[in-house]
Length: 145
Ligand SMILES: Nc1ncnc2c1ncn2[C@@H]1O[C@H](COP(=O)(O)OP(=O)(O)OP(=O)(O)O)[C@@H](O)[C@H]1O
Ligand SMILES: [Mg+2]
Image 1 (cartoon, rainbow, N blue to C red):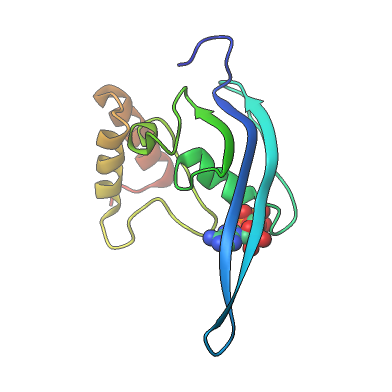
Image 2: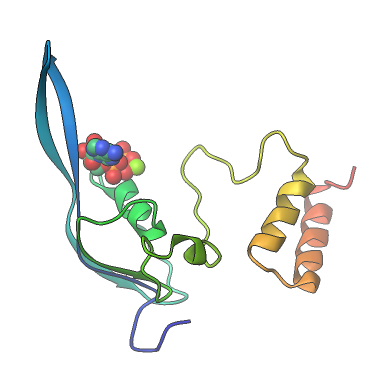
């Protein structure tokens, strides 16, 4: 993990401005800026559980996408697990999990076990731990058949 003086998630003055082009007539385009995230700063320590709430369009998804490295902030500083998400997205992906609403982390056209095997490798879960979790869930949910 990161040092004890830094949080697991750190945002400092983070902004995200989208440039939007809208057709306003034949060959006419209007350029507009949408300030989706406006100078956000907070930190979340390892093991802390937090909720990030706000009305529709407040910038929640944009913030999460910035934390995962899908989007690059227009300004400010982001660190997750000591990593700059937009610069090192792939390395960060090994350390985090993200579920967006109405989407599943399982591949719909694959047998369930294939998704689990992929996660096992992707997150480098120790074999014994993987087995133990799998057995527990298979038993609990009656999935063996
Ligand atoms: N790719 C984009 N291009 C232009 N504008 C965008 C883009 N993504 C988001 N926005 C705008 O940025 C603002 C914040 O959107 P965002 O999706 O982050 O809000 P949210 O808090 O997740 O909302 P909801 O509760 O509806 O999911 C909104 O005004 C949205 O229209
Ligand atoms: Mg959203």
